[in-house]
Length: 188
Image (cartoon, rainbow, N blue to C red; front, side, top):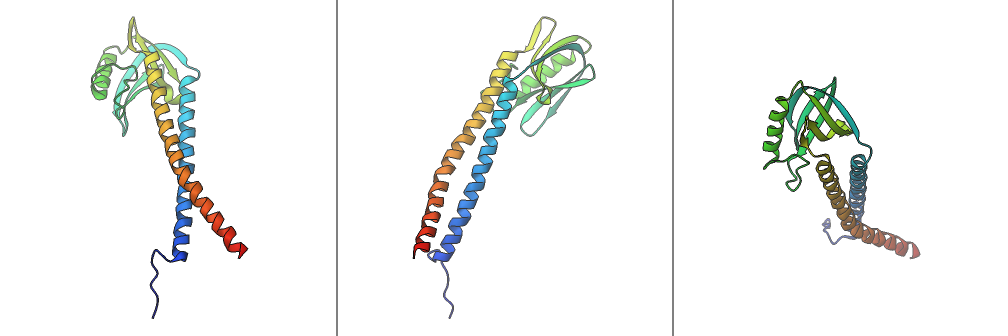
């Protein structure tokens, strides 16, 4: 008769612990990658800003998975205004009650200004617009937008850092146990 193996069997338990250590190690790598990407975006927003003036040629609206986006065409080049809709505490320099209403209202105002001269402040990443002025009217405040974009990226980075710390402790404990058992088995 064959003996059934259960969770108490040392061989199965060792394989499960090794797999858990591997999965925790992979999770740590993903979390480090998340921190690196968030820091990259923080640096992009904090880095060099560009300014341009031109005639507004067209305006289009798009709804993506995690954000609303208005694309502006000026001088044959495309620029983008985005506002994530899953972070309610930030308005990204665009005033309004809800993200969708604020973006639709901004779109309507910009469509009424097609053919007029506009001034924008942007970063090279996706030609993301931080500040937008038409005539004497400021439609997007660059300082407010920059503050919200960097604050949101810092929040993402902090979440990945917290997840890293939470994952690191059990990873080290399991790794220590595996190394301790290996040394104990070799000393026999």
